[in-house]
Length: 193
Image 1 (cartoon, rainbow, N blue to C red):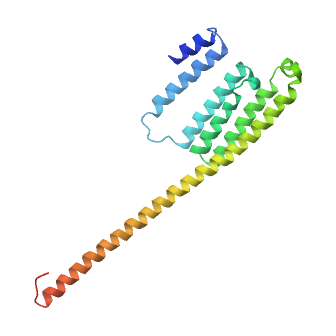
Image 2 (image 1 turned 90 degrees about the horizontal axis):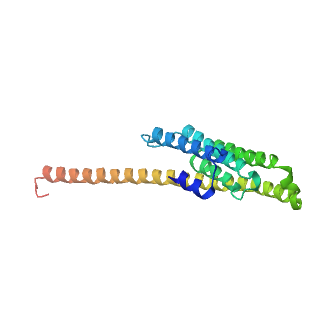
């Protein structure tokens, strides 16, 4: 349904590369949903493949729609955020480098007439440096925050286990005291416990 809406508003030709990329992306996502439906939590490897496919399709869409001059080129940072939140440090580094490489590819494949118009080459190179810095900063901050949250969750779980153990020890101590009191009362002949 949403492909029809996009096609109507953007006036894609039926054989346009962008429409083909959108259809392929939709197909892959539908297959992924079907395959992952029964899994409670997908593995890191599965998530990494899905994020890599998304990065590839996003780069393809940008390539066919203005490349580095497209206003939505910063969307290439979204896979970096997802990788840093849901995957480990190596995946975070890998997707940051892949995202930077994708943007670099778009910058290097820009038509030369785009850079000569009003001497925009320095502007696009500045945007490229800004993208690299943004990608590195996002990777550092998001992965640090994800690690802090995971560490806090582990600490809370350990505290909960310790509290449960202490409650069990207290319950055993109370039961032991009651048994001892009953035994003392029974041995001394008083049964009114």
